[in-house]
Amino acid sequence: MVGETTSVDMPISSMIEAGDKMATNRGDSPPKVRSKKAGPYFKVKAGSAVVPIYRTDSRGRVRFTLSFYRNGRRMRKMFTDLEDAKKEALFVAQRIQSGMQHVTDLKPHERDTFKAAEALLEKLGIPLYAAVEDYVRARTLAGSESLSVMAMEYSKMFGKIVRRATVPEVVTELLKIKEQDGASVAYLGQLRTTLNRFATKFSGPILEVTGPEVDAWLRSLDIAAVTRNSMLRCIKVLFSFAKAQNYLPDEKNTAVEQMQQVRVKSEDTTLFTPEEMAKLLHNAPPDLVPILAIGAFAGIRMAELERLDWKAVDLERKFIEIRAGQAKTASRRVIPISDNLAAWLTPLERKGKIVRTKELQTHVPALARALKMEWPRNVLRDSFISYRIAIVQSADQVALEAGNSASIIFKHYRELTTPEVAEKWFSILPKQGQWENTLSYDRKKRRVILNGVECQ
Image (cartoon, rainbow, N blue to C red; front, top):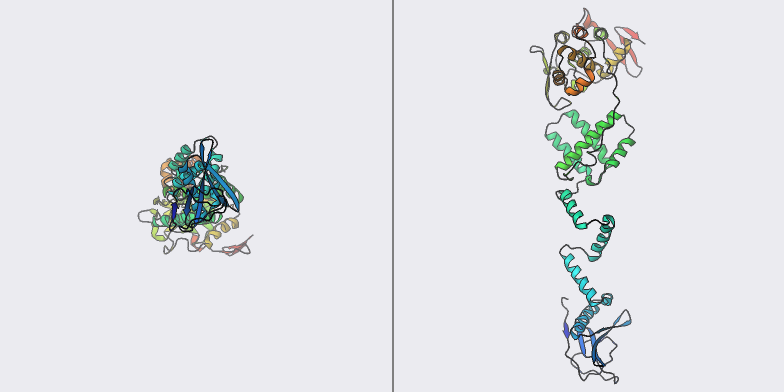
């Protein structure tokens, strides 16, 4: 011990001293004789603490006895070897000096084991009790399995993890990288909305998020199956990114990545007939014509159309360009302009945004209601794809134009109509007086005035 003086006295042959009382250093003066009882054979000192060793002979056998006090009680330890007795006495004296008498009740071999265990753990900086507690917990969980083997497997799976990143941290990092990589505004918006909501629910380490927890959360939202699948895809993107950044093990798919999407019942694709589309267009005011005509004859998604300005429409070369940042799939595509679409777009003033205000989105279904027509979801895009594939007879070509997969085109749109009907669809042209149409729509009162006539 630092700053502590320890010593072992030579054998005392003529001292007389009480043998059952803890001794302390008293210089070189001889001890006072209190009784005829023999004094200690050795005195072992540590600082001011002294532990006496007594020698006794019994039937030709020599015994060395330590005598000291612990918590007010006299303690004795007996040895057959003097060196063992001296070693133990020194240990007891040191512990008495440091106020740790409670350790002295260990047997020598137990203390050697204790010290060896402490030495092993000293390299790791782990207290012995914590190590034993952790071992007991691990052994309870492992059962009969080898802890070493399990540790090696764990190291293979989790050894590359750089830190225990939280879900909000990973979400922030992912969104920043996606933005730097030029992801579309729509895609970033979808990721941001879903993942920020996810990070609010799961704010701890991403390593601790489990598949069942994510599934239970998605089910609790009470949302449509399509929306739920869309959110799950965003969450899977997050976990794939976390694995690539070494925040998750990369040996296999995570529990979240293995989650299956909800099976969505396929609904029949609804098309407008050429007659219905002509009725809509022939009654549409000029500001609704580009929405209806481009949707029906080019199949552009409404969300994509909102991002386009008239610079994307090249009537001379007859194509519409959707840049990567404007497309839902974040990939550029070019859509041919049919002859009848060119006829609808040429008379219009083509400056600025194609869809001047988002309010026009509500005016389109209002126009349909005024004409006593239904307005099914995605009806213009579904109609375009169905009629287009009927003419070109190529799912791959239509997939490129529509920004979809060939398998989806083939599965949902093939043979829904005939080439003859499709020819009629792409032959719808403006009528005389077309550009004089007017429409007024009061959304709160749900009142539509079409060409000066209020429609119920």
